[in-house]
Image (cartoon, rainbow, N blue to C red):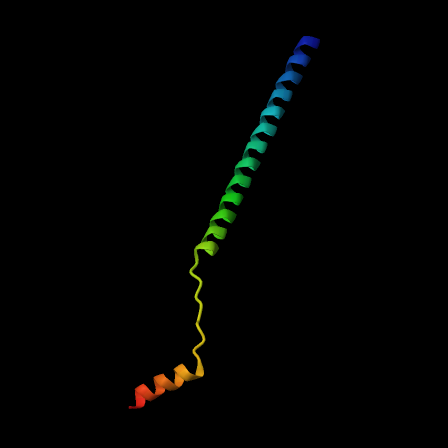
Length: 70
């Protein structure tokens, strides 16, 4: 009877270990997916073009206005 009980206990332990390993594997996969999403979002931010407006001097504005109205 002891042999049967120990065999059953061993089987239960194996099932529990397998379940724990599967859970860890799933957690690792989720973490990898999360990191990949964060990386992709960060990459999109880095790739966005930066728009820089150059301030026009007063003289340049006058010149452009004069050209328009002449």
